[in-house]
Amino acid sequence: MQANTKQLIADKFSAMARQRSVDRITVKNLVEACGISRQTFYYHFQDITDVIEWSVRRASERTLRESVTAATPREALERFIASASEHGPLLMRLLSSQRREEVEQIMTDSVRGYLRELFLVKAPKLSARTSMGDMETALDFLAFGITGILLKNCLSGEVDAPALADRLLRLITGEMFSPEK
Image (cartoon, rainbow, N blue to C red):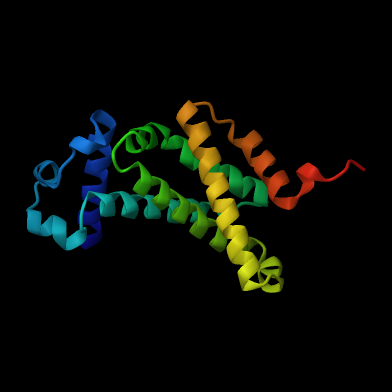
């Protein structure tokens, strides 16, 4: 029941955020919409930002599960981009709220965690031969860059997931800047 209650709260928040300003959604609104007590809400979440973070983390975990079954790294990236673009309208609302900085940080952390797990599963040899410092720097660089690109593309509403995945993969692998053979 606990996971169901958490999901119920997250789903109600998402539905409310699609219809009105995120800044106007309160714990009181959520508990009324969910038919639960404030105590139940605070048992599961600390505040509204915690709801957003949990929701983003869950979406990232789902996308990771789908991505690791992809045949190629390009296909894995494409699935990730498509998932992010699906949530474009909600992202727009979250980013136009007073919680913008928190939302950007949550997204960056989510992308970083996603990439870390994807590298461990899809490129274990790369992960094994790269120093921890180099891996951390690469993950930070990629997480901030990919988050920025996703925000720019998702907010414009024009995301060509296969093309963007191809560009990102060529950038990540260095192929984009390699001299032609």
